Length: 137
Image (tube, rainbow, N blue to C red):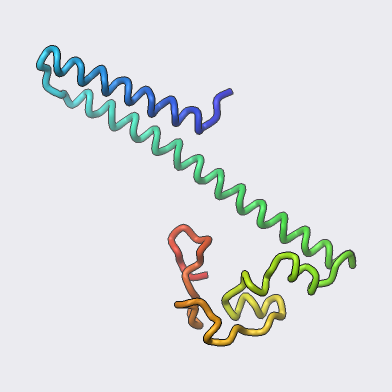
């Protein structure tokens, strides 16, 4: 069974092959480019874009599932007394990862001093590096 990435590669190759054949035909017969050829090219480009978007969505979903599972594992360790919150915070390096004071407060971490806060992380929040649009978190 072929994967989405393989389908994308195949579609790109097919598009390139068809374009080369089309260029040869234009050169040999002095044929003008027709709307049918343009429509076919656009259709192939749209299909490639659709498959690429599906792949990105799948990767994003997988990343979110991993985050959820890691959080669940950390909570279970604390709940079953296999680890303390202090140990979990150290393992996950939360002190250096969490840069917004509201996020830090959820894990009983002290607020960052204003000179240690990243640029643009004022009270209204800073652009989230994990959000595709960089929206505030």
